[in-house]
Structure formats: C-alpha cells, structure tokens
Length: 257
Image (spheres, rainbow, N blue to C red):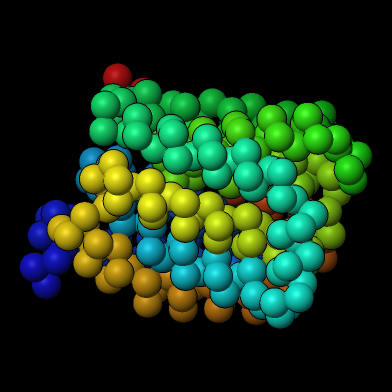
C-alpha cells in the first residue's frame, strides 16, 4: 500500500476508489466527466497536480473502451468527422500542459469552473448555445483550441467538447462514441505532455494505475444505464453533471485563493 502514501490515511484510499467508481459510472452514462470528477474529488484532499496525475491512466483506458464500443469502423468515422477539432486541440494541449507546474492551484481550478458554469447554467435556464450540424472550420478550430488549452492545464477537456456536441444536437450513441475518440486521443496527448512536465512520474504513475479497476467497473455499469435512457434525459443529465462539477471546482478555487 506504499503507493497510496501521497493520499494520506487509509480512509482516503477508500475515498479515492469510491470517486473513481462514481466517475466511471457517470462517464458510462453521459460519455464524459471522469477527469472532471476525479480532479474535483481528489483535489479536495490532495494537491491539484497530484490529482491530475491520478486521473491520466484511468481516463486513457476508459476512453479507449468508450471509443471502440461500436467497433473500429464507427470510431474511425468519428475521427475523420472531427479531425480539425482534434488537431487544434492536441497542439494547444501540449503547450498549455507546460504551465501546470507554475500556475497557482486557485487559478487552475477557476480556469475550468467559470466557462463550465456559464455553459451549463445558460443551457439549463433555457438559453442553450446552438450550432448547425456542420459549424464551420473556424468555429471547430477555435473550440478545439479552447478545449486543448483547458485540457492541458487540468486534464479536463470535456466541457468545451460537450458544449459543441450538445449544441449540434448530436444523437446520444454517436455523441458518446465521438467523445470517446476525442478524449482518448486527448488522453494520449495529455500523458505525453505530463511525462514532459514531470506531473506523471515514477512516484505518481503507480497511483494512477491503482485507480484503473474501479474506473473500469464504473464505466461498465454506466454503459448499462446509458442504454436504457432516452435522448432528452441524456441531455439534461449531461448539463446537470457539468453544473454540479463546476460549482465544486469554483468552491475549491475560491478556498485556494
């Protein structure tokens, strides 16, 4: 159990497993939020950079499962459709990841919370952002860059991606698959970036690996739930999860000021 030493007392190890399980279930239902929940939950009792290291391997493996759930051909179609978003996001992610060791924790948390709350709050209030099914190269590139910037800083690139896909009224199964492809490639870039930044290292990698089993159990459970809910409920669950996670991150950011 020495690998859990950075988390503190044994009850916090159990709490970390519960957070990973819950994050997996929610990701299986709505297609995202694992990094968001792990970051907001783990950063309640460890430093944000350690929480970021913990989420990297579970995020990578669960996204691979999510992307390939309907088979490699469907995943490839999603990859081709959003290639500009992915290229711009990946390039910016690699650059912004290098800022993590020098940014104050409060800034890191607030950078994620503010746009997240703005999108979820306005959507639930009946003023959702709407985009056409093909939003144009400029919009796609800009949203990819924004997602990459936030993703490199926090490991959380879902809010911008989900905002774009929800605004395009993407069908439930397709949205979940597209997210898996996007986040899976982003998770690869994130792992590479944070090997370079030093966030993922010989001390933090075993802890990240230890959170894989509850994360995989969670996403399998979530998939079973997702298959049984309709499109309208799927969309509202997506927005409420974004809102609640954003409020928690905002709280943590204000406390850290």
